[in-house]
Length: 174
Image (tube, rainbow, N blue to C red; front, side, top):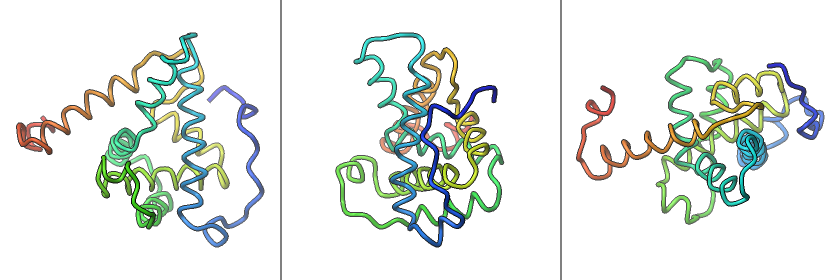
C-alpha cells in the first residue's frame, strides 16, 4: 500500500486467535482498529474537531459498517476463511444496547461480524487487513468525505426502500 504500519501498535503474537478469544473479544478489538483507520482517513486535510468527529461517526456507526460489508461481499473480495470469520462474528450474543434498538439486531450483528474480521486480521495478517481497509475505502493520504457521502446516500436509499416502503429493493438495485 506504500505506507508503514508504525501508526498502529503491534498486535500481540497469537497463533490461533479463534481458539484463544471469542468472537465478541475480537469484535471489541476490531472496533478499535476500525475507528483508528477512520480517524486516520479523515485526518487530512486539517479540520475542526467537530468536523473530524462528524466524519468519523458517519462511518463507524453500525449502519455504515453494514453497508460497507454488503458492498464488500458483493465484490467477491473475501476468502472463504474470512467469510467463515464473518459468520462466526455475526453470532455474537450481547446485551441489549441502544445501538441494537436503533439499528436493529440484524444490522448490529453484521456490523459486529465485520469488526470481528478486522480484529482477527489485525492479530493474524496485517497485510491483508491493510488490503481490506483499502478495499473499504480507507486511505492514508489526503481524503475527502467520499466514504461518508457514499454511505449517507446508500443509507438514505435503504431507509426509503425498506423502512417506509417508498421503493422496492428492485428499484434500489437499479
